[in-house]
Length: 499
Image 1 (tube, rainbow, N blue to C red):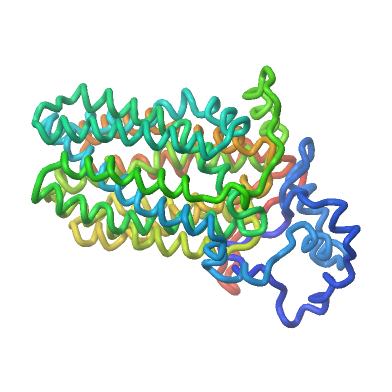
Image 2: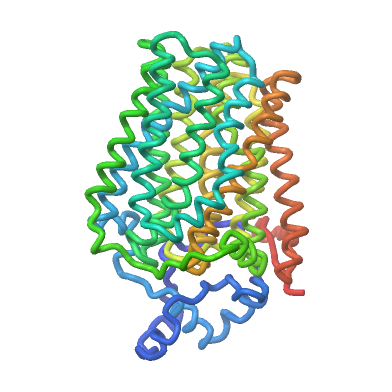
């Protein structure tokens, strides 16, 4: 890649009316398209080549290069719609099943943290440790989940994992309702719940591509985030009301019941309409094969390095909002739930923006959004009042979703389908597997220095980590990243240079 911009590219992905080469697609015959039906996107290198080489090979001033770029991602006229993937029956079933399940998930996230605060008498370290234990299986088991996702039927895997998580949530909910729950039991069930997530996430990530196919995959990724964040608007607010009216246990039990919607949706999906990919045979060192593939891809390594630091130190909203609400602003469960809903407004907008995208985001966009998110998180931690704090949360939600959506798309759209489960498992391991380290450390920081420093310190560490990733990992891709500032017009961005 040879240029930089801090603004969103045209979500339609089409050339402007002034572009004289708009009709070059008509010059491409079917033999050309058949010869390379699933190549890397522009900006993605073949294994063993650099990102700079891949981007520079497509000089925008060269007519033939622009034709090749369009040939790499055949577009559907309906893909310009924000909700194009919902035109597929299987995806509609999946989307609404996931929406109901996600509402329950967000209810439990709020209720579980509040339960730990109550049982531990306001210990920030205990909240952080709960989050750490829930995400620890992501670090330990997700690569194996990726191998299973590549080798076995993903619908079967999802039925098993959804049932596992429903039983875990049900057990915790019953103990909370009956008043027998203790902190160590919450720790244990958080870890058990995380075991299901470690196998559920890789299968879910890979399953979406089977449901919608390659052309609508960017739209489906954006809509998945829309579902998640629409639930994030509803779930915390409902959880706050349920906790205030009935107690934390009933909010957790609601999540256990919500998994039925996803199990029913998976059952209703028509397997005949799924996009089938060749499954790799059983063999040794399949996890190592996934890591080896990533090591050959400098672009994917840089994206994964970025999401590791953002996920480890920046995405601890469960803990930071709970501590800020209770200890800094002296609010109750209802106001804590409202904070999650307010933040989800920005996240929902970000996911809708992502749903309009048809092409792979450039890596410099991923890095720029990660830096913006980290800076906003630092500023949010400095807000003096509850409402000034709440007013900035939508902007933090927007930046976080644009970062995560663009990172997810850039990896999914450039990976070999036979390795998608393993690569996405490693991606999820790095994004969420660092949470045990980050949440435990930031929980301790909040307990010793105050709740504000969970945001200021977390944002600062994320900022430093992203910059270090850009400086170090970009060298493996054969390019370097430097800031670019112009005054006329005012512009701040990143520029990549081939070595």
